[in-house]
Amino acid sequence: MKKMLSNNNTRTNLITYLVVVVAFVIMFTLSEMGMLKSAVKGYLVPVCAYISLAISLNLLVGVCGELSLGHAGFMGTGAFAGIIVATMLRDLIPDPTLRLVISMVAGGLTAGIFGFLIGIPALRLRGDYLAIVTLAFGEILKNIFSNLYIGMDAEGLHFSVSSAKFQLLDGGKMILDGPVGATGIDRISTFPMGFVLILFTLFVVLNLVNSKEGRAIKAIKENRIAAESVGINVTAFRMKAFVVSAVLAGMAGALFGQNFSSITASKFNFNTSINILVFVVLGGMGNILGSVISATVLYILPEAMRELEDYRMILYAVVLIVVMLCTWSPKIKGSIEVCMAGIRKRFKRKGKAGGSNG
Figure 1 (cartoon, rainbow, N blue to C red):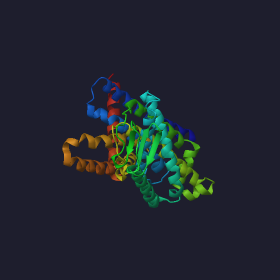
Figure 2: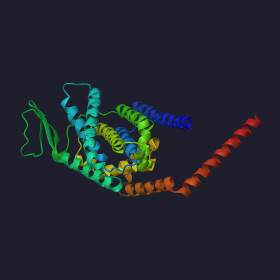
Figure 3: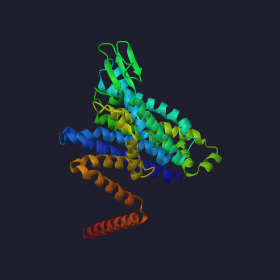
């Protein structure tokens, strides 16, 4: 039985990696051949960031069973931390790829620290209460960055929460300008680095899920009391899932933030957290490949329908409702399975008929 489960997990993981690699090869080849429009190229890095965000949130919501609505806060923390570090290293490290990697690591570590600090009080709660608290912390993080002034001059890095008291020497650079956000960002994020981040996120999450610790996390989701009765430290494993999810979200935020020349804290609001949660729910709770596909489709869909102007969000909502019904309705799922079984039988009959004629 264990071997069968292990084989199924390995097969599913390989399929997930294969889908990601094939999609990257196709899109990268089309991009290099000049067959993609500039608008489509602009979607590639954000899609990679949102795929990583969906996978990391699925670890917390789908695998651990904890409802969090503050994921955009960790994304924003990683974005601004990454921008600050990349700006500070601009003269020391001219190579943009290396600078991006360091800034993503810094963004992930910063988000992980905030995740740990937030998790201490938040993870004492469960269910709707945890969702409300994480939502509040996400909004607090957004407002902190909306009122933070950071700049760099010959004397080093300067912080302030008041624009009146903030001054830089001649030749200094403003990195974060309160409500205006970060401006003059070096756009060093690339599609290949987004692909690497997705692979790294998949590696971390899939290995964690399929490890002993992952089985303990699943046990907590299934029955908290039973898990405690067999000696599982529920608080420690919940914290581990929460921090790992925050670190990956911070890395994705750093990639996302350095894809634009300017970005404000309002980008990482409650709506962004809800969008990421929608990607997870529609892709399937605990289904990593589903998160990859849903994040890709649901990010591109509203962007592709911009020409429809006022009607695009209505159509987007209709698509979400239809997908939700098809995903969760037992009748519709049963009908789809019957249709797929019928199609398979027809193909088998044709194959046998072709073989007998030969």
